[in-house]
Length: 96
Image (tube, rainbow, N blue to C red; front, side, top):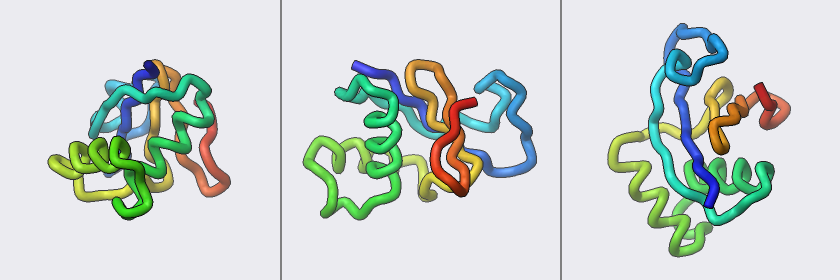
């Protein structure tokens, strides 16, 4: 299992190499994927895709996310895979 944590960048807080200072942890879950790129693709798809395009397990994770969040992953947001932060940029995910 791979630990995934999503940090939403909503405001002017600058990333200081410590995820706790980035802004806020919006959601976390455990992925069955082990390769970082697969985990990042999965996390983005779960949060940003309509539920009918997701598998049952992905749709369940999306529902959990939507309980406390109403935004998609956007430019500047961070997806941490086993505590390794990746920021979403115009050109895709970039390891920090």
